[in-house]
Image (tube, rainbow, N blue to C red; front, top):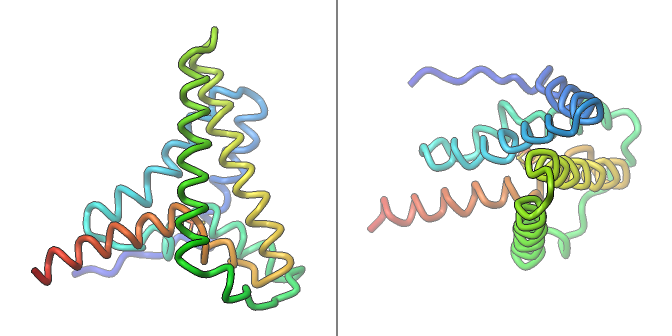
Length: 163
Ligand code: SF4
């Protein structure tokens, strides 16, 4: 199998572009669906966490820009438990569902959904930045709902293979 090239050195550009474009026109918020869907797509295709290690713009941004300002503390064990990860995943799914529900009932559906996705993306990025400053730069990746979801998909696939 040919090893996939890592794009972690420059993939952060997509996150910056996403934010700028969405501020200019909130309809670009729809691009966030790609960011949320890509890790799941790769995991479903049996590629595990390849998105996290090679492509993710958010992970790339956290790793690149926080390394010089991070306090570099280890994330406490209590924050790395399955309960916390499942809780964050459930919270994100709930917020996302509520955003979509309101978006589909808004006057301008396209803009409302774009805003909902943008808000979710920037909220998780802001949390990731705060965690990256207090703890190690990519600490967010240890609890990230998308990263956790890909891990869950891989677990199911591994279980099926071993049956
Ligand atoms: S854990 Fe989340 S933020 Fe980190 S690389 Fe994976 S998808 Fe991106």
